[in-house]
Amino acid sequence: VKKIAVLTSGGDSPGMNAALRSVVRTCAYYHVQCVGIYRGYQGMIEGDFKELNARSVNNIVNKGGTILKSARSQEFRTTEGREKAHENLKEHGIEAFVVIGGDGSFTGAMIFNEEYGFPVMGIPGTIDNDIYGTNFTLGFDTALNTVVEAIDKIRDTASSHNRLFFVEVMGRDVGHIALNAGVGAGAEEILIPEEDLGLGRLLESLKRSKLSGKSSSIVVVAEGDKIGKNVFELKEYVEENMPDYDVRVSVLGHMQRGGSPSCFDRVLASRMGVKAVESILEGKTNYMVGVVNNKMALTPLEKAIKGHSSIDTELLRVSDIMTT
Ligand code: ATP
Image (cartoon, rainbow, N blue to C red; front, top):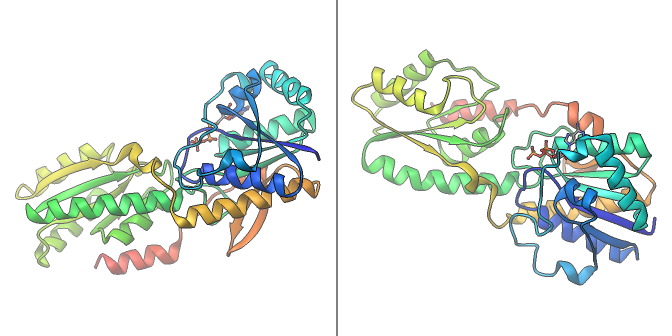
């Protein structure tokens, strides 16, 4: 392989730039040409390419977001769109690509590989940590640090005013961010989709907590949690049933996706980039690079997409004990 392309696709996450830098530098190390594709698959279709060398990625290891930009491309979902993308890659002499993104981006890569036998490799970039085949996705650790910092600040105001705060965090259908950040920030209760606490038990728990002498509380709610229809209805429910509590809601939102990546994410990104390029050079294709028990691991894209990243039951137990 003489020329490899790299793109970031789908939702962005902190650490994507560090992964891009790693892919580019690893290519340089092995004397392989590297091409950056702007705006994800849409840029692949439109031929938005730029040659990158080791110096093109100076000073980006610490930057959030992605300098290649990301996009969602409807056109890549069509055979015509993918045909155009293939033509462009061929024209530029590109022989493989690394896509940094989530499960949708991997699905696109897999379909492209099936159609054209084109070598593809995935690097999991999402704050949700919801991908099978890796203990950590890029951006997860940074998002946890952001959430913990935000909750620490909310706690200051909560305890000054005897307030109960529902803090909604991201995570899509899984509760990894809520559970980890909840434990880290010392939340009184953590609501995640994997465990149905039920409104009755939530109320009991809050009343118990009040009786035990706590005057303020933080409840972390995963966005995918099904306990109430949404976090504002939760607030109403608790206000009706605990009239003496001043209940507030804070939805952290997109701040969780931004910011300078943590050291952990930068190191992870560097390792993943090296593994992705080396795997391509070894003739491997259709895999996602991950880290499992602190070792680099390859998981077939199909498995990474369909598999389930299960919640850490040991951490659940720790959380139960900590919220006593
Ligand atoms: P996030 O975790 O933020 O959702 P993602 O990679 O899952 O990231 P998607 O928007 O689902 O984000 O997918 C990114 C892009 O991948 C899509 O815009 C589309 O171009 C391509 N893609 C997704 N699914 C398919 C598919 N079934 N066929 C072809 N391309 C696809």
